[in-house]
Image (cartoon, rainbow over the protein chains, first blue to last red):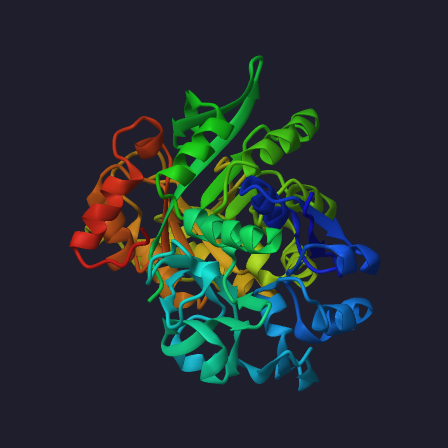
Length: 199
Length: 271
């Protein structure tokens, strides 16, 4: 049985993502055992909280995530951790999988955090978005966003400024929104991820 | 652009047959509406943008059984899920989040101990902490801090009430909203007792006043009976989300009908 490891590095509630993976036919395992993460058929890096403490807590898993040859999905802060660095709470180094910097929304865009349902504009075809319509609404909760090169950008979203709402590089894919909270659109994305992991 | 959110609310109690969604007028005359797990699933499928589950049992034994109901409800929904009712401690919040909720809604215990709002938002993050404010119009203007002009030109201030609307506190609702934002609340769920269960529409004067006074999202609650009430809540009340219960429970309007009505009038909604 293919297992998708949800890395439990001490951030937030992992139950939502775990039950969503199970719901779409995967087998999720919430784990803090680096061995289990290493042997999984797919890895999910969740994340709610602050960048700096997340990077500290992630240390035992950092190398095996960076060097993973299975699909890796980063969600929200989990996606931001892919970046080279973040400005949240001072400048901190990330996993440096995707060249770029995580920055705060400027105050003038509106209420911060950017919270609620917003649309994703698909700028590149990718199997993770199979069956997902352009401009679908997905659920966001975040104050920071990733600035990176166009070649990594999968979708963008408009919140006063157009920011990067998902990224892809090789076997790494990251979503700034929460697919596990994004209704049927989110479930479709997770189903695609499970399928990719099974190959 | 962010979609305006439509949020069905489940007021849940326990009876001899198990958990039951109920709804009353001004918090009394409760009428049964169905099984919370079934209703939650249905609303998710019908396009609800979020769900609010309020435990109105308020007894310790009921609370333990309710955790199980919350867990079974959370299993059915893949949209943001908020749980409120009788939350008094960090342990209560932990139990509810562990059962699968994404946010908690805190009401009476925030009023009694405002530091609890700060503590909860520091531990769990502001995005997790919704402060429910129940209020009622008070026409004794000598006691209010923020005087609001009502639809008919009369003036009143809005007093925070607790224990399900039974106990006035003397606290001005607008001042309280600003205070909870400072303390770290991530969202305000605003219910006017003058409108709750009446189907006369949201209490626009207070919804607007609080939406303009704070920089966190405001959920309008109490009084939705027709599609135009949602429109008024968003446009005149400047709310970020509109919550409703009986209009959906008893099949008077579907979520889709409400959203179509709003979209035709230029309100961004999520499909």
